[in-house]
Image (cartoon, rainbow, N blue to C red; front, side, top):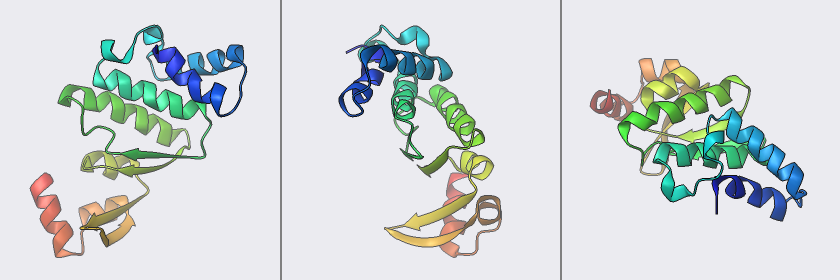
Length: 149
């Protein structure tokens, strides 16, 4: 399956979008994410960051109201992380509602409206991103931030 086919697949099978229209939508999204030049490549021929951008294009092609990112950068080489975070920041700036699970604290401080800090499956602290990350109220969040910043 090529990257283009990967993005068109859900449009065609789930939404029953005709092939020509699905190809147009997929091409637009791949272009938006800066990976249109990869449309004829297979996933194994692309870097992890490129694969992640194609996955985001695939999700956007479905016109979601909300996007979930679960550690979108955790498996990437460090030099590829910024590119994916830049894409996510751009989505936030365009008004996309996102729920993001991340350990990228600087990104969360800059992009998030609200942060929920969880530990062992329970909410320890929540609030406006900058306020929560700059002035943590719980000792658990203070400890966490001291170890990751």
